[in-house]
Image (cartoon, rainbow, N blue to C red):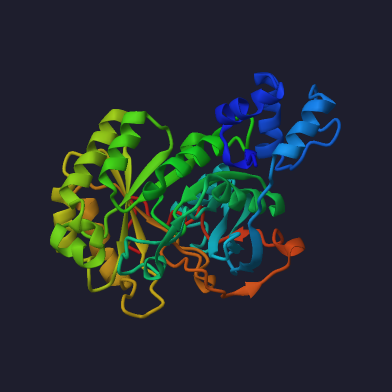
Length: 397
């Protein structure tokens, strides 16, 4: 059977051509499948498609779905979805509320002028979605809940897109971004993640801007090189974990396969090829990787690199790792800023439903909500997913 949900536009046009469908009609079918999220071809569903072609496609196509097991909402407006695949595995995705950018900038100005509190909420204007790319993860990062599941299998393109489709269909505001920071290592499922990104960014599909699609990696070196060579406009994010190979190895076993200097060199080349800063993510763990000494070593590692460093609080339900204290975090951040490293601290939303990156492991926590209530909460404490809390010019937390 033909699964059109698994195909990008060029692939879909080629797949329907044997049924007498022109490229123009193929693009309309693509829009029906990927923008409208529709299934099947009843008469008149696609303008210009003949009854004969509609019948032939109906007979040839299948329309697989992920089952929505439940939805959990956090007080800050994050909603975590639990999906079940056709072969019985459970995966998670998160709907992340975002404010209007102009309103967020205005709030920043008011805060700098001392006219707004740090927890003033902004109404939601749009959403981004955090998508899973695999069932479990084989990389076994020590602070990551998904890594404790082990590697099970990669998701197909349609399974990635089905997460977005289900969330967008229930959202009370448009979905304008996507981040591959859910379950799995996206670059170990390279072809399906890139194909899904092509569909998500296609103007005839969901039409998410390519620059609003982020793909995170723990450091799969050949895929980073391939991504750069292919010239994709999606944002590539490298998760560091530590500033030295010795320390990173204890947290991220991928270090034994591709070393930190190698992957940072690949990201440096990516920055030069793109002509822009690259984003590096750093999970901050109290007592482990967030001292002024670590900042000095990060400064040496990133010297001369066009980079933005995102600081993310660790979320470890086992209790083995704890977030840094405000004092630790402040000293670490100040040392980085003194070295000229552009630093942003990101707000980790949805904590009570385990919705933060690194905590997705198909766990059922938080307030379960019905589909007709899923869009009812519209506040985010401050800005974006893991929203901006620090700017380089500001003081410590």
